[in-house]
Length: 84
Image 1 (cartoon, one colour):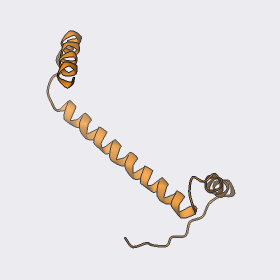
Image 2 (image 1 turned 180 degrees about the vertical axis):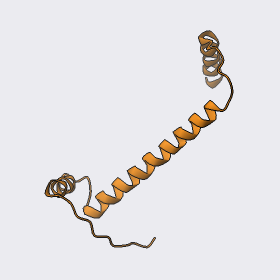
Image 3 (image 1 turned 60 degrees about the vertical axis):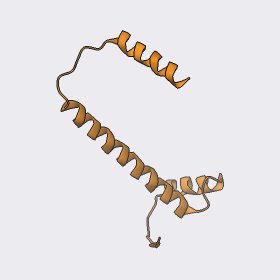
Image 4 (image 1 turned 90 degrees about the horizontal axis):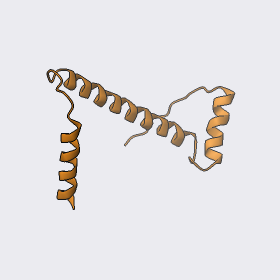
């Protein structure tokens, strides 16, 4: 994977925060911290997109049916028996 150099500007408070994360041993340097933030942001965006897609699918799946909690519990108990 090729690397690209970027220049960023931080406030003094932000810079102190990053330095603190490195001093605590969470990261080896500024770049590792920034890459971790980007990975977390990407994951959050992916999860949000998945949730939105599930909501769209749910809304388009038809009319809701009454909830039968007894049937749900019974099905769960059956699954537990099969898993043992």
